[in-house]
Each structure stands twice: as structure tokens, then as C-alpha cells.
Length: 192
Image (cartoon, rainbow, N blue to C red; front, side, top):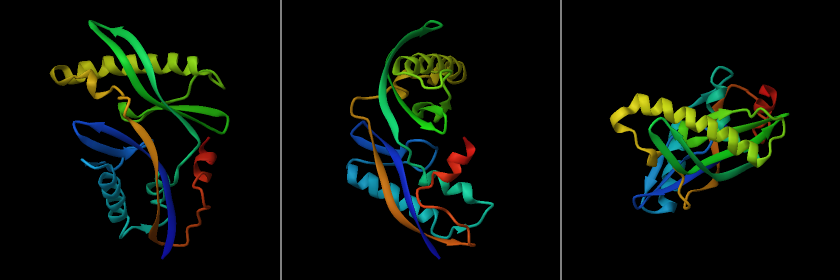
């Protein structure tokens, strides 16, 4: 049995008197509670249970890699204003971007973690905002068609109280001699 260090950013939202905490870069478990500390503890316990009987090998390695991915990134609630069809949007969207290799990746966690690579190699904030707004507009058009009566723009908007933090804890894993370097960035560096 080995101990791996899980360290990854989580997105904290405060809605309707509850904290909602979930991974920032990938679809994963979510915890909610009226108290921040209890929501954080609940998420940690859920992940620990998920990997309690996990046996690591080369075929399932990708299941743990997101829990070890913690790049240097920018987290912003970017202001956006545009119309799409008969709808009008004015608000802020949680937008996260980081550099991996020679690429900048922009993630929109509100939109099922949609991630894109901007056209410019080293984009400025204005370029990220412009391209993120174009992507959000396109996604909202699609969602409006799919959700019809249940479509609610409030589900996608950022709140000033939203923030991120890092979840950091050791996790015991049964392994079959798979070597991972500490930091978890090697896989992602190889991809990009």
C-alpha cells in the first residue's frame, strides 16, 4: 500500500444559505452544507471513501490524476454582456485559466468544465474575456434549446462570494508498482 498526496483546487459557491464545494477543473463529487468546514470535510471524506478499496494500475491511472492536478492558475469572475436570440445576459462568469507547456487553457466550470485553447499563444486578459464570452454565448444558445422551460441564466452566473481553495490530504492507495512523481504534473505535461 502506498500513500499518495492528493492536492487539487476546489470551487466554493455559497447559494441559498449553503456552501457547495466541488472540484474546480473536473466533474467529481460535490458536497453541500450550511457550514463551510463541514462541507469541506464531507467532500474529503467522500473522496477518501471513493478510493478506499481502489487498486491502482496502469489501466485506471487516469482516475487519480485529476486529484493531483494543481497548476498555477488565474481565477476570475469575468463580466460579460451580450444577447443571444431573444435573451439578454449581463453578469459575471467564473473563468479559470492556466498555462500548460506552450498552451493557455481556459476553463468555464459553470458550463460542465468546458475548456478551450485561445487563438493567441500568450493571450491577454482582454483576449481571454472576448473568447470566453464567445464560447459562453454559443453554449447558452445550445442550453436554451435543450432545456427550454427549465432554462435559468442564474444557474451559470458567478456570485461575488464564490472563491476557490485547495483540498490537500494524503490518500492510501493499493498499487501495482505504478510510479508517480510527486506533484502530479507529469501526465499533463506529456499531454501538452
